[in-house]
Image (cartoon, rainbow over all chains, first blue to last red; front, side, top):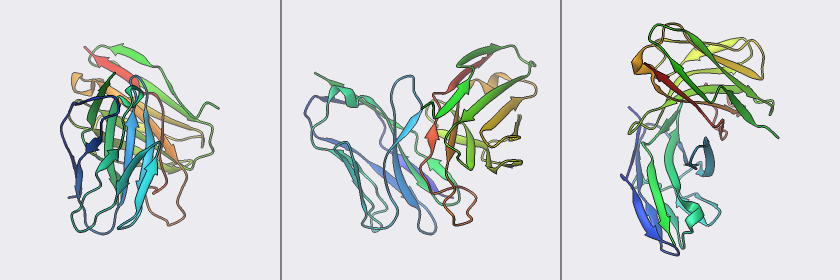
Amino acid sequence: GDSVTQMEGPVTLSEEAFLTINCTYTATGYPSLFWYVQYPGEGLQLLLKATKADDKGSNKGFEATYRKETTSFHLEKGSVQVSDSAVYFCALNTDKLIFGTGTRLQVFP
Amino acid sequence: NAGVTQTPKFRVLKTGQSMTLLCAQDMNHEYMYWYRQDPGMGLRLIHYSVGEGTTAKGEVPDGYNVSRLKKQNFLLGLESAAPSQTSVYFCASSYADGQAVFISNQPQHFGDGTRLSIL
């Protein structure tokens, strides 16, 4: 069945470091791909999305490119801030929204 | 601008008790969803609704019932609570994407969650 695999966390970085959170997927058909972010004590918020191969989603300095050949949608940011500390979920949407298990990011000053 | 509001935020139940979680959205969204979030398992869909008066089962529907009597409200009921239902529950809503798919491709807007403990 369809599934999403994310790198396990926590990912611990210093402020201004480069961030990559890996996400790969298995799906039949042509899913849309999403990154959601969950700040402490809150629900999930959409961070960015891509609906077809080679699309790049971007928002708040984060980027992810839909790579059909490698079935990946890795999240990147060039310079993280303390305020980026949160749990990040990769998700795909075919006939339902399937979430990865989440990756906790901790950024220290 | 409230968005998606969940009530209550916390609740402790004893095994066998029943309760209802309320979700309300003020964005005029057609679709609404209930998820549970458990450590190491991401979010799993319990039930969803594509419109007023309609509901459907998701990935983990057993032990739960839902109702969508009004477009803005989506209720999740636990008939006889069990310790395995201890979890954080999230409600979400979205616009329909106009392509007649069961689950919208539009972004989902989430509430802040309800933390439920069953003793």
